[in-house]
Image 1: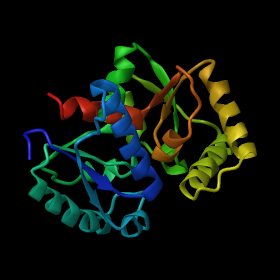
Image 2 (image 1 turned 45 degrees about the vertical axis):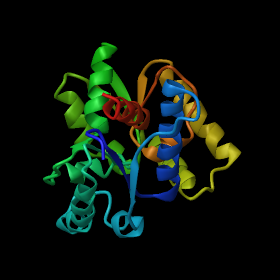
Image 3 (image 1 turned 180 degrees about the vertical axis):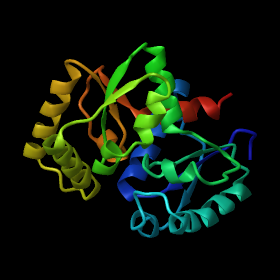
Image 4 (image 1 turned 90 degrees about the horizontal axis):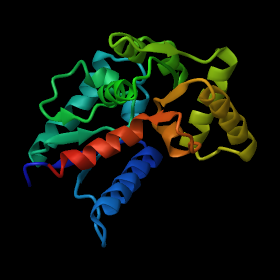
Length: 221
C-alpha cells in the first residue's frame, strides 16, 4: 500500500454506492482519462450497526471495533465513513487511522465563508441532538433547526431515499423547503441520504461532498 491509502467503510448500500461513485467522479475530474479513485472498500453488515443507531452506546462500539481493527491490516492513512450520524460514536473510540470527519470539515468551510448562522437538515435525531450544534457553537456559529412539521418532512425524505421509495410529490415538497430556507440561510446537509438527492443551490453545504473532496486531497498529497 502507498503511504496515503484510503479505506471506505461500506455501510448502507445506497449511501456507500453514492460515495464510491462520487469519489470516482471527483478523482476523474482531477486526473482525467480513465482515472478512478484508488481505495479499499471494507464492507460490513450494516444491519448490525443500524439497529443500534443513532445514539452512542457500548454495544455499538463493540460492533464497530472489529471492523476498525481489521482496517489496520490495510495500513490505511485515512478512513471515510459514509454515515454522518455514526461519527458521534466513532469520536468516543480510539481509532488509530485519521477519520475524514464531516463535522471538522464543515466548521472549516463555514468559517472560510465567514458565515455566522446555519440551519441543519438531517435525521430527527441529528436535528434535535446537541452533537453538531455544540461543535458549531464552540466556533461561534449559530445553529437553527426546522420546526417540528418540517423536521418530520425531512426525516420522511431521508427514510424514503434510504428505502428507494421517494416520490416526485415528496421530493417537490422537500425541494421547496430547501429553497425557502436557502433564501435566508446556509443549509448544512448532515445526512448522507439527503446528499444523494439534493437541489442545486449555492446556499447548501453538503457534509458528504466535503468528505469526498477531502479524501481526494488526502490520498494525493
